[in-house]
Length: 570
Image (cartoon, rainbow, N blue to C red; front, side, top):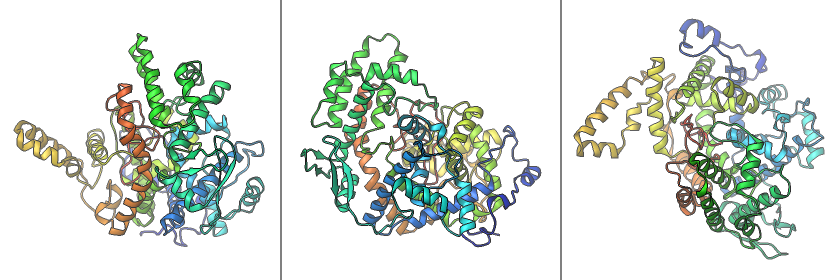
């Protein structure tokens, strides 16, 4: 029987009362063959069920009017920062079982899906990520069942007392936004229409009424970068974004960060000093000066050391460029990217079946251990695996602990890979899966995704290449499961055929208007030039907002997200 995630039948009991069927399935199908016998407590059918309910609630927060939708998310982001400030304060007791307002959950959830950037942000901004609780998914679900809504008197009282904010964020709130000018420190009031435009349009500008500085996403993000460099030079415990966590394996070394920051961002160097005193900073100028600075490392004899330093500089720039907020990823864009995945999950009757969820948890384990073997390959999950992956990631500390122990390093997650990269990655994943487990990976035909127009043309022009393509197609055919209406929606990498025109238009509007800001900074205006000056080829972006590689910016292929979700930026 299919189950709607919001049906009353599903919400009669708490998660602890929902029966799990994974042991029964394991005994009958022996589907764990080929992987170690391990359990992930946070990735079980009941937790997937809770996550689906959460996504349904997120879907309900979407506003029909685009401007109001962005306004709501910008206010939610401000409230999320207040929540983090509370968690990092002396007022927070780790023993408390608190939940934040649902809009804060919305932003927090997207931040967690860039696990390495989230970890570094918490460590860099608050210096005690170990104190931060994991996302309270299980408690949220139990509260929804018990109280028939997102209400918890204790959490609400503490939230209001410590933030001065109402528990429920009003989507119709049309009050001005307040912003502190980073130059003169004056608090400005900006009409919400202007603020939304300022934060979504790279060409938009506002002038500070006191110091008359022109404010834009570019100048604000430049100033944030410059201020962090200055603060680092004054206080060696205030780390610069992108320097603490290695996006290749998730390792964190303060000693390494100190040594490299002293070398790369010391104001004792005239070029770095010039950056910090600029009255009109621009990313073009910052990158130009960093180019000169990096060229000084030609005297370094060890090529490996020189390359690592270049990667650190690049990682750092991508943690700031086009992001005027204190985080190393654009959280508003991250929310919009996740909406495509949410749409596919919310009304998917099949994924709500306990037996399907149990099978998904096993497939997820297999996917993880396939990643361990294919460390230089981009692997793309199907929708069911993706749901498990997301559910695992939002339990940040447990996710880090598990992947480090069982996979050998932290697996990053990127939701911004180009369509061509995802298509090739999906085909490669299907073939690798079949080779390792001797079972089909998907109902989609990977060959149709892999066989691009370019490959077809080249096959005609060059017959030997055509023979190679033909042989490859035969191998991909083995990776396909027989179609079954009851589960084909789960094992597909995408569901383009069932998207209606409204979905397509909404997807186009949100991605073009919010991702284009970062895209213009990274790909059109700065990205390729920056890659050239760093001397790095075929190197994807990092941080969860730019086109990137599998699970990291360094080279660990790991995995990318298909099915309209995200891959492994971080």
